[in-house]
Length: 360
Image 1 (tube, rainbow, N blue to C red):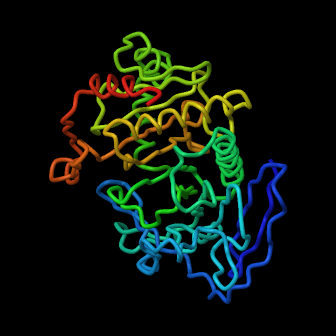
Image 2 (image 1 turned 30 degrees about the vertical axis):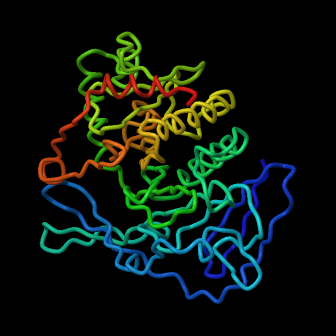
């Protein structure tokens, strides 16, 4: 793999990740871009003990552009894009409309002792899986998928070293039903200045389990799913995929390495090689589930960088709002307001279907 750093016209960083045989890439961005916006504001919700980024500049971000106006495609004469080169393998660059941006800043500013806020320090990056505008991650070949895995791991390591970053989140939103605003195959990486609510909740359960049993809860969940077997979807030398016992979504599968690691950067070369093929197989089965391109969120849960890191576990949560070929699951009152999910499909039937479409 060859990594090339490019500084865009407004000072943002872009990284090319190329196969060693790929040509050199352009390093000059000719666009007359405005200066970057100031960091959004991070506000604390005292009732839920959660942080919310208020990023009003994101109202101006690009929304479902036509193919010939896509900012994630390579540049061409008379049409410069976010990527200065005329071609690329995999590209990662700082988001032009970030939810978090900039180095660590001032300490908390408190109003009347209830409301706390400060600048939303951190970083948001875009990961372009291919220079081709049409298609999806599932359409990549194994070598390109492996290069994406390497880019994820490299960015996780580098972002984890930034001062003030507490957790790194690698994810992909696919399909307009999910809320995607760019059709070009891409994902994102967030470097948060806090530990996310979902991770805090999981680690609280992990701590209770450790106290009660002396064991790690993530390890026990994987072992229990393997013993039961009914919800196991796919096994390889280094990875195991299963539909969770209490799946929330009409299509949902979790993927864990057999050897627990905190994050993508901690995977060894054999685990990364194996992951590329396993992940492609899962995504292709997803598309075969209803016989349509599946809208999904692919969320890589990674251990926080300070609190309870040794107890954390890298794992993928892949899920979809699609509940039939022509129907969506909407998060209405119970899910959206109370966080109490109701799933119309039994987890065992989801797993059976994902096994049935293997190789489809």
